Length: 92
Image (tube, rainbow, N blue to C red):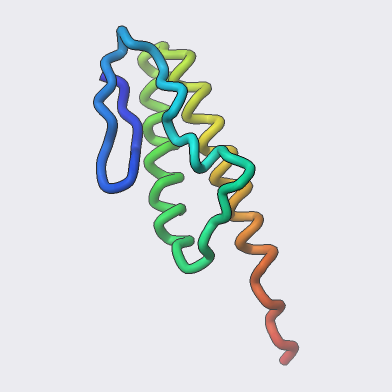
């Protein structure tokens, strides 16, 4: 079973079906705007995606490994976006 984290659960697409072209599509969309208030949720998702990427790599699922890596890269970009929006810390 290919595991993909989706809102409030996981997709259970069978490995024989191949990688889903819709998996984590929002996080990889140019129109997606991360909510700074949900940074911890994105952090949890990134941790899950990294775990799934590593699992896919151990199993030799190269397409799944690459897909999870793309999602991890997108989430990392979203963290940079969030961090760049934060107001600067006041000087002490």
